[in-house]
Image (tube, rainbow, N blue to C red; front, side, top):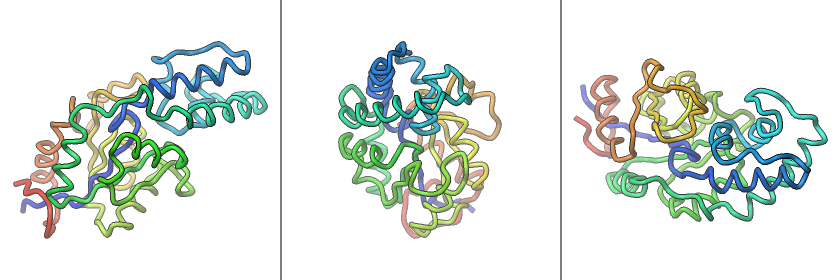
Length: 240
């Protein structure tokens, strides 16, 4: 049986919006305020994905899992939050094709959501500034629930909030964090190749479909629908 996907959940940073330029400026300014050397845009691109606090720990330690000295971390983190709040969408850009694909899905009756590890104080303002907020029926941030990706809780919660079955849900992201969350939640995963993968070769991972641009998404969802036999829905784009 072929069917229709009910819910598409999107990661935000590195999937819908290239937000690294503004994040990097805020990180470097926060580091400089505490007499620390800047790390630059490319390093920040590699550190994004597990929330703002982990980003600052990585910026201070130069490692993905290290923890900075608490007093230093607290000062840099507080400074970063203020600096980034002031420039959420200055040099950032919506990735090509995103607006068209989202509009197409919404017009066709699909339910869309955002599940990000970005703090809630930044998520909705960024979506508004980028002109994307109106596309989404559910938005969950890294501090909306007790746990964030790669824990499956946000995906399960988002599906329940809009009344979608996990078997009819697809997560579109850009990192292993997204892939692991999808795996644990039992939903299909699609990864964009242009985001913030932290230096990991996503093409080497099994059971993950990779797209190079957002315009490829409808065709890949159609392929997933044929292979996984999504339960038919009364609305949506026919993916036979």
